[in-house]
Image 1: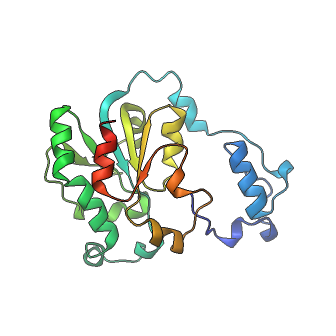
Image 2: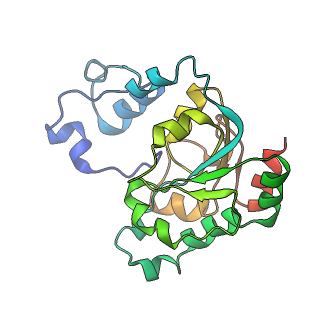
Length: 212
């Protein structure tokens, strides 16, 4: 997740953390500038799970994985409150888009949806009309296997984008609540001009990007 709002316990001034591992030099810079750790306290070690992605020959280029991240404002909602949220409406609009369903049918493709662990309890509230759309469950489905096997990622602000970037796979950002997210969480990067892939607020633009 790329928000700027972090728990104070993660700051160097808390004196709780001696070393803060970074996966890239850019991340090391952010940790140094925003959490006040010295460079000597921020070893750049990459991510261990990326070792599993090397020489990946399991990818089905036609398949899609949609992984929206969590929202702080939804954390304590009841399921009934959740289905009234803009988050639910934004996610549902994508997974039930008729043009997306047509795309999946034409390409003989599948879309898999995996909510953030903090949001998994709401998964049963999502309803997909197309049989080519499957909502994954963290208790049953192996997420790393889907990250390896799917060809394209659709996400909003999730750091899972880096897993796909490492594998040199296509990434599309669907940010239906970009302004609200920036006001609530903030971001270290320009969400409109993410170097990892194009960013859109409208479902139609996301579907169009799949065909280019």
